[in-house]
Image 1 (cartoon, rainbow, N blue to C red):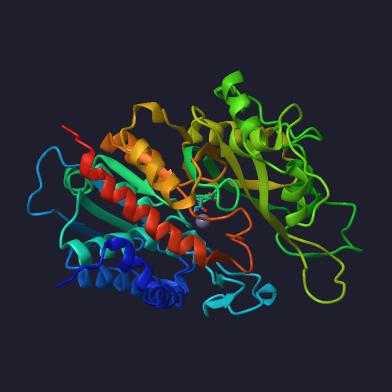
Image 2 (image 1 turned 30 degrees about the horizontal axis):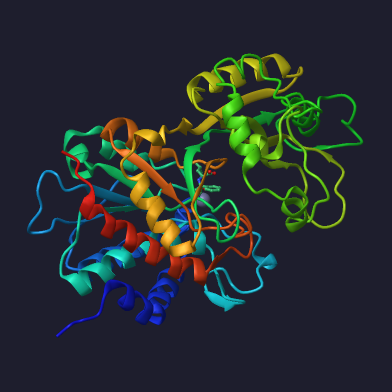
Length: 466
Ligand code: BES
Ligand code: ZN
């Protein structure tokens, strides 16, 4: 007779959960790099076989980009009143560069000080798997679930902001497949270590690349220097006019649609336990910088920004090479806040840059992807209370509520199109180094996440969606 509770099962399977996590962390599922296409696919297949081993109904949907894996389970006693939860995650990862800064190789998960180090550990394989193992533990011990569950895990979040999943969501068939009452996402961070956090907003994004061309080839800087406009100089001059010394974005009309932070919200941000000097010390800085008139938390969570992600021009090799380069380019992003439309910001960027181009330089602005930000009214969601209770039981503290500075482009689309509540509950930490060398995920966070997630699902037995 099986007498184990799901909580005992979770406690007894720590090693198994870790072993499975390490297995999937070995796949270099870098969606932005064509060479890794097969690795991305193998990762999708790993998830499909994980879901199949749990006896879920499973589907791998091929797309022009990378595959989407769907899995679902409907309990035999399901009624219309029983909630359907969709747990969403992404199995793709950011490129691991610069490789020489990793203390252990990015795709060889290595445990140090209770953390597993690997690209994708926190963003997002480890975090997403907490829900998979929570469901597995309930199914193994109870033979069924207190809710209907759908898993959606895809491989384009980090590169295009989930274009293929968005396309699926636009079709009638896709809407049916993805229909749910609650979208559960663990792809954010806790406000402080061990402080359970429910995130009620995300920033949007606009990602661009600017290409400048001057002479038709690299030139000798002695023969030609001073007689032509150097594209690298043009690029730095243009970029320097996009943001001023007060951290204010200079693109005309950029702030037109920004919803100002309310006094209530500023009060809520100020009440969060935030140690500013520790925050900056952890990233090797004595102080921060940002838009004048706003606190660090407001700048990170509630204000739009402009950032340069990478600049390329001319000779970067060993020693010196005296040239005027033919070309220069830069990748940059604007983080957006709710109510700013990426398309409008893209036009504003284009119009402004057009006024900044010097003579002798031709240019092209490529818009790579965009997503709107969002801010949720959690008072309306019946899923917040069971989650808050599950978090308090697990961490011994009530959760705090905050907005996140990062973006998860598909989430606002899910919210609008599926008309389902969004529940963003992250297990990560600010110093997990997502998108950086030595990305990590705390194994304690992993196991607590599994437990809190399972407790949340258990509590859905009392939630009626009719
Ligand atoms: N997990 C992140 C979102 C995030 C970032 C949460 C920072 C918490 C803190 C997600 O995987 C991500 O990186 N999204 C990209 C989206 C972009 C490529 C469209 C982002 O925010 O840069
Ligand atoms: Zn990411």
